[in-house]
Image (tube, rainbow, N blue to C red):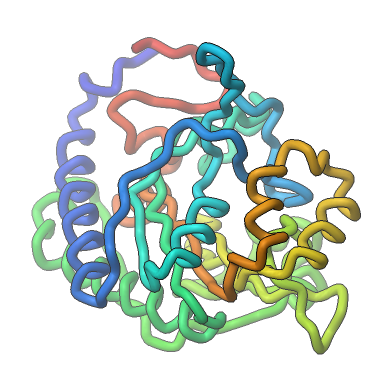
Length: 307
């Protein structure tokens, strides 16, 4: 097995990554966001279900004295609490551990340890998130094309600057046109990013009040076969609806008891947000076949860990 630091192309990839991280942070701060530090251990975390895109085989757990803790799979529940405390616009460069099924080894887009830029906005709706993310993606692509021209040439990568607004499709439309594996096929069929809306996912994503069984959530999909870039949604904040969804999904309410107590007290508020996978963005910008190719220390499901 090849050690990543021996690969000649890892240096231009990491230079592009440095530009991306700098621009992500500056972009969000310039738009009034407060940066929070990540939470690594918690009493409760994102269940990642019933998300059809998830294949997590276990949640990592640790015992610290008398405390039973888990490693955070995302900071969604913490983000809801943060905006409820009056932090109206927040973001976190958040490391996540998701122990994906080893059969995801060859998808090209799965890691079991990765970083995402997680953000949340109090009182926001889908359209607000779409506008912000489109501005961010366009800004990053323009900046990388300008500041990392030599690196892109070294990697043999040409990137189009997309036009705003990005196309929007429902998952029902995409499945009807491209079949069950619509993400792969639709991504390969497009030359610019697009939005997919309405996924049957976790209890914290808001169900459309005017269309029961449909959901106010979304994924951003990269073109050229690179697949999912971002996942997010408008959030459910009402205790009765949250508990109803948890029961419907067959989850153990006891696991979420700290979160449910906050919801029961009426502390949660309407919000919306998303998480943008950093390594997946670097993969798209650098044109690499596998997202593991952009990591100095690979964390691909099913691969041996060298360091």
